[in-house]
Image 1 (spheres, rainbow, N blue to C red):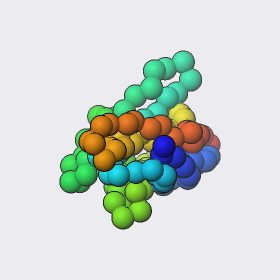
Image 2 (image 1 turned 90 degrees about the horizontal axis):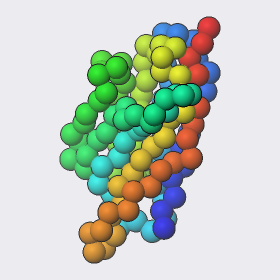
Image 3 (image 1 turned 135 degrees about the horizontal axis):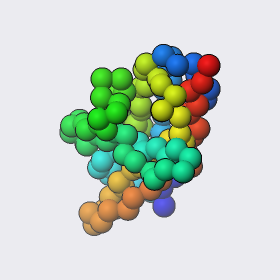
Amino acid sequence: QARLVESGGGLVQPGGSLRLSCAASGSIYSIYTMGWYRQAPGKERELVAAITTGGSTNYADSVKGRFTISRDNAKNTVYLQMNSLKSDDTAVYYCNVDVRDIRGYSHPYWGQGTQVTVSS
């Protein structure tokens, strides 16, 4: 079993910045893709950004140029740097990690979620 712990959410004014972190621990043989999703009230959960083991990234169109995803493989941690935040970015942000066991089987895990509120 793996465990994900998120941190870094909070209240920020429009135009401000926040950095989210998600650390994976526990029974982990290897980690493949790591990503961030978000869910706003009344909306479906959507992919914000993802990063592969090799560092390839993809972003939702709505955050391109403002958000940056990165990872520290030695620490099993993924980060999301969010700049130029807008009110539309307000949501609960969840990290998602694809943990592989020694046989190569995929086990996706979700973080507990962290609230990001952009408001003046």
